[in-house]
Image (cartoon, rainbow over all chains, first blue to last red; front, top):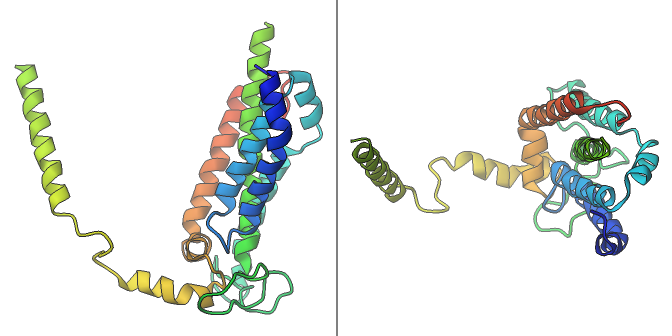
Length: 155
Length: 90
């Protein structure tokens, strides 16, 4: 399964794919894409890393990665950002937008503009949380499938 | 007999689909346009984001995204519960 071609391709391509996924997640409120799409791209990069390595290396590498905790943190963070709307408004109200909050709180210039990263209110936060959740969930599914396949082969 | 019935149903369904496709509204002219205009003209100032799709997904229709995230969470939990074995720890 792991040939020299896959290993060499992964060595150069994995970092690019992971960077692209993180870019899609963080720029979700400016460019096409968002938490779900960026998380899927990031998880596909991690899937490439999983496929290209031997079973022991994967187990050693992913032992320290708290995938389940990341999934839970993403879900709870998303709910928490939605609950912030209860500060005077309703559920899912974008309270940080145009409020002058130092992170993502700047007002957006109306009309055509180059796109400023420090805008969007709760949208970038939700993008980041949902992206964390999606990449942790998809990666853990792929990891369980791959390790299960290895267990079957050894028996 | 069964074959003729199937052929009849196939032709009828195809005619129905063609009739439905002929009566579609032209592209870019939906029936209700008030909501689209509201989103396009107000999303940038209300949600403070250039990407109107993201502002709809995470702000105006946040409950939809909440359900989507719950579906993904349930799927991951189900897969991990069903396929977890000894020695496989995530």
